[in-house]
Image (cartoon, rainbow, N blue to C red; front, side):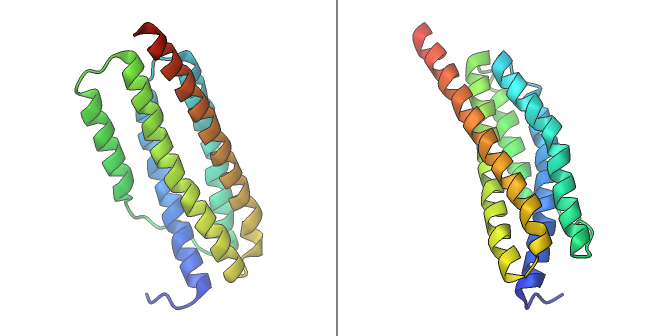
Length: 164
């Protein structure tokens, strides 16, 4: 299928973002199970619960443009997952592993934030006005999640520095 219009590009990127989110959900769930710090576990758990709402926002947008999600793999997610579990295989201390959990979650979330920003721009070009609010809601949520992860990383780093 040739992609020749902003709307076609929007629909294509929307489907890819849905798959990125879906695969990322599975990867982050696996990563979260290795976390030790209570604040980090809470933040990761809260995000896991909200991902259903975020997926529903994308699905609603896909339905509004008359499409179902594409079934494509997201190699970047597979790479992040492999990188994470290779690191865990080196048997890091719990505190260092928790820092790496945060780094992995941040890498993925910042990628998704970029995808949402692009989708919002494309939604304007594609006149997909019905998609702007759910996509903006997802973007805002991801940005708040990054703030929580950064707070947790600072707390963990300070505690780790105090023990050295």
